[in-house]
Length: 430
Ligand SMILES: [Zn+2]
Image (cartoon, rainbow, N blue to C red; front, side, top):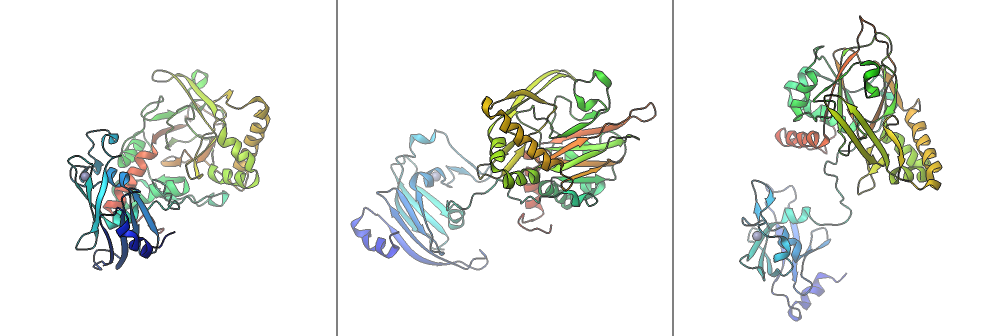
């Protein structure tokens, strides 16, 4: 890379209208960082503004990027925190050119003068903003970058537990619970009244319930052979995630036990992300297979109305960074259609089988019977659950009320609480 002293010496021979080379000292109350030692160069021919930061790294900001992200009052609404765009950006952004780039007197802002940009003539950027947008390539950020903690059967008697009244009345406790669902994928809430309507109260603290074809909330009671979903019968259900037949799958489910079955009805949970990471380590090809081939799911039936839901997802979904995003697995809702060439079908089944070996491994799975007055909250993108068969009798009618919230609602609530309670999400002890 060409050093900046060399670049500076070339300035007179290049079509550079302005450059500055300034050591900035920031007042200590403005930033925990006391010094900026920053050099700025406007490389007009390349249509780049180069900034050499105090750590020696250089960021080349394309003029078009700076134009697109102008923070002036006619380009950006600080209240809405959104761009004000009356025309599509191709109208002028490609031509807009930075004529001069210089620091302000306080040495904390970069001023740009524009040409070929219609009525728009200037922009001001906070150095902190520019520094936060350096595009180093190694700063890929999740929209909510809280690290997940994988678990196994060691949490059998140690499932994180929260109290209903505190979640309803204490925002810190509400945050701790949501954060736990994000980090661990599972949390119990105890102390609920043993009657319907409590799931809705919890969801209302986050935002609103996610309605499904089974209603605003659903009532998991045995409806006998008439039920069009197996969940509403009394038989067992193998490990699965819920609503795989939705394209937009509900992110968190909550099950409130109102009446437990005297006989049977235990639940099992396994950390699907742990099972999948084990699969990735031991059988990388199987792991890849499960990320590649979409499996079709459907749910056709009647609850409050007739429905016919179909969706397809690979069993393992990754985000852009290759990190785990979601597991979509439900044998009972899986159709016979898998988007995989016939000669890869056997591999596909072997991959599923190996995944399930980890999911069902005694070292990974936990089992217990949800007690009346208790709610289990589960990350449906991550944790698989199952239910043992139960016995229904006239004097013992198992009753679970369930409901969902989307992860969008939960993470939104967490960000609001982080701001309101002044919580830094990077702090581990909340
Ligand atoms: Zn502007």
